[in-house]
Length: 185
Image 1 (spheres, helix red, strand yellow):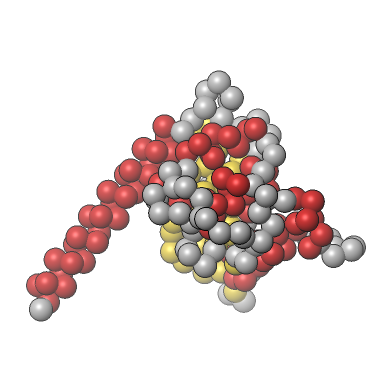
Image 2: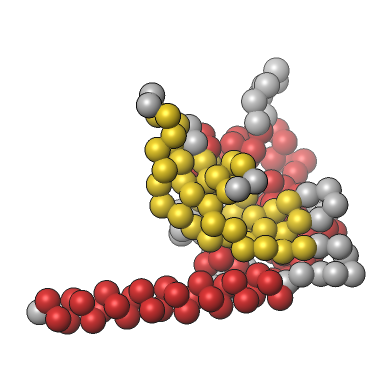
C-alpha cells in the first residue's frame, strides 16, 4: 500500500512539473512585441501579515504581462487550462465597469480592487489574509475564485477596455463558462 501511495505521489509531482513547464512556455510565447507587451513567469508567495511579521505561505507561479502603462498577472494553471474557469470567463468577456464602480461606497479611501473582487464573488487575498501574493516586484492583489482560478483584480479591470491586455486575453486557452456572472459584459 505504501508503495502504491508513493507511486501516486510521484506521478502527481511529475504531472505538476509538466503542467508548470507547459504554463511557462505558454507564458513566454504570449509576448506581443508589436504591442510592446513583455511576459515573464514569476513565483508569488502567499504572505500573512501577523503580529510577529509576515508568515510565508505556499508559492504559485504566475504569468505577468507588462506594457508601458500596466502589469497584469494570471496564475499559470488559469492561463493554460482548457477547462473553463471564472477568472478566464471574466477576462475573456470583460467587466461592466459602469455597474461595478457602484460597489465603491461614497468617501471610500482604500483600494477599490478588494471591493471589486468581492463583488465578483471572489476572495481578495490581500483583504482576507492582511497579506497577499508577493513577488520580487512587491505585493499584488490577487482575486481567487471558488473554482480555484486566480488573477490580479486589476488585470480584470483593465482588460475590459485596454488594448494592452489583448495579449493576455489571447493567451488564455479555455473558452469562457456559459453562464452569466455578476458584472460581466
